[in-house]
Length: 319
Ligand code: XMP
Image (tube, rainbow, N blue to C red; front, top):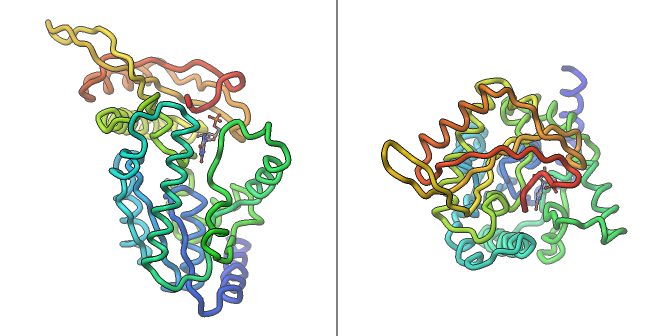
């Protein structure tokens, strides 16, 4: 609409004024916020922007390829992809505690990102897809350590070490405004309506120690769940839908063979802001399809369970 195109013009002008002829780097995660920030900044300053996508080995199936397709091939954005999965896995070997896993993943992310920036050379600005509610929330968490139940590593950390100036063109916007802006900039509906995905990714959805064999199983199961949620129109109706890998083996039968395989938990929740959440009442026939597809198509899984816990007292993620 005309209001949003006016907004784009104003925002583009503001970015050009702030940046001048300097260079900008942006950590692209493939999530809504960093994607919209990338598209907007690219519209303003083109090749002065470099995006860095860190493949930490904890991403969903096809995620890196999707980001490359959209941003490098379609938008022609200067995109660097750091394939660092094995580095992350090495650091995570033997680690089972959720908060330690988060810290390791966060720290390694900063290291990889740092290295990529160094390779690029002279950079002056770090762009971030910080929204208005993020600004408020980090102030709240900073003032009350008890509020820090889980360490979210989206805000802060990087710029101080790197002596970069911050560029945060979405700082005054709410989520729905960011989605509208994304569509105005040519991002697909599918892209701007993506569910939230945690920074530590599948790292907090493999319970306990992370192994590449577990990640492989989880990726396949999760892809099936998302496919079925989208096919039936339920993806858009819920806040988040994902699978969790449980490192528990249980007995089953396949043909006349006894199996002893892993368990996948299906987590689908409704929520307004992730502070509270209800488990989503997905029709049984859809759950039936999800369960039989995962068990039949994913090698290593012989049991699917449904998480029927609400937040509080449970959290949305299992770790
Ligand atoms: P919980 O599990 O605390 O999750 O109910 C609330 C929301 O936050 C997401 N989440 C994270 N996001 N880094 C993130 O960037 C994290 O470590 C993290 N932990 C949880 C979760 O997916 C949900 O949307």
